[in-house]
Image (cartoon, rainbow, N blue to C red; front, top):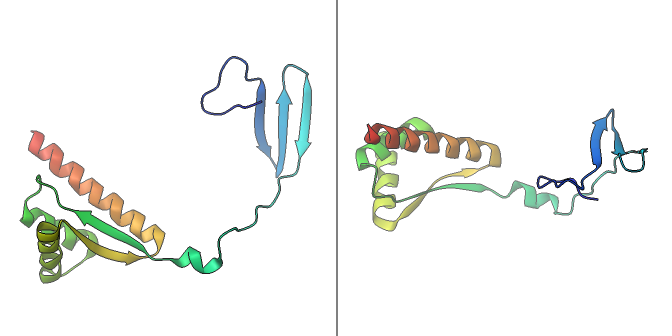
Length: 126
């Protein structure tokens, strides 16, 4: 029986994680099943985990070039010359790889870039 995000009225199982044990309660039969969780094995080779992630910025017709340069300086800490170089690459080639490295910092950079884009969009709306 499946109890996923799209639950229907026929879903009667409830799953709880309790102190490293999984208990499943079935309301129809009135039974509780307890099992220890299994350990999943890594299926990817370990060197595949360290593949560098890239933060890529694509061109858009909305943001001014001076604004994009300022965002690159604030988010990545680039000096003005490097930020302008990436901004021109985005403008002329349609995209630029701004950063490459581990996944977590890449995700943070992307969130920050999205925040600046949202801010610019809201400012233009008012």
